[in-house]
Image (cartoon, rainbow, N blue to C red; front, side, top):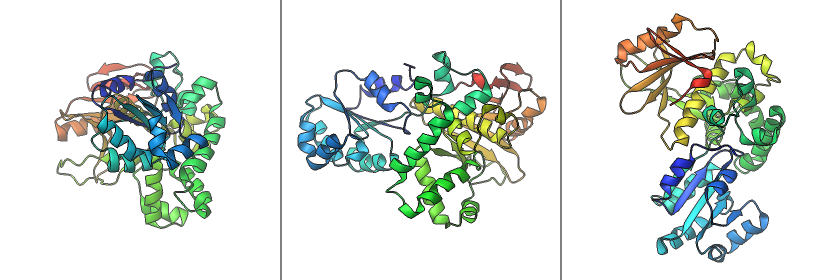
Length: 381
């Protein structure tokens, strides 16, 4: 089993909280991780029809089976349990409950209603490259790694990536999306996901998506939220600090996993990435999602932004730690050029911040007079 970086934060939270929530996309390894990390408590999967029926119809007696607590997987299928868990953990401080779920919509709503302030919140995303590297399971070929993606089952079962992602998308549509949108819109939503993949790494333009799909802007906004809350995409906000320049104020759109992105872009083999029109966007997506996953798996707020002014001066990614910003310029080229630092030099001039780097598609990290150059396989927060 590949060790997950989030384990340290889980062990820390166990000291403070009786209830720990673990959310994340389908197939990110939540069930495997939580059963490996937590010993001595029963594991109940609420996707089981019998367990789900019992939990929904008689939540009080369902929970009485667990005098020390339990791991309740896919708890969004039995929302009736949340209020009862609040009551019994308030009455008995020795109880421990671990709640996992793939649908962030229901989890967030129920936790805010019943468990606010009582629960430690964790998110488990697909593997980061750094996790695979530590386990000696990383693919040391950039195109193949991007194409393969980072979902655990691909590495555990050796499933061909395109087979995995085809079934992943179908399962996602059937389990997570159905019920959130009308059945007659399912085919449109499927096309919408493919259309969104072509916007990866771009500033999000709701009106443009509405024009391309024939849907209203409010519908597009709702569907984007569905993709966010089911961990298909995330939005990178613009950095708002005033540097006396007009700045772009809309977020950029990224996918959590490059393998899924490649599938949706209909890339059939890794070699196509060398000349694909979205090569740069896919690489930028890889770098920013890697930074995002490393932060989240350490229990840290991602705090990732981009910056772009009205003159098209841009910083691809800013990490704001509260003590300053680390700026990253992202270039898919495997050959370094001093010009890669042009935007960073501009950023340093207006921000007076020197903690910056270029991340590129080559496999050697080194330092230059202008700053650090980081290889694609050497990204580390």
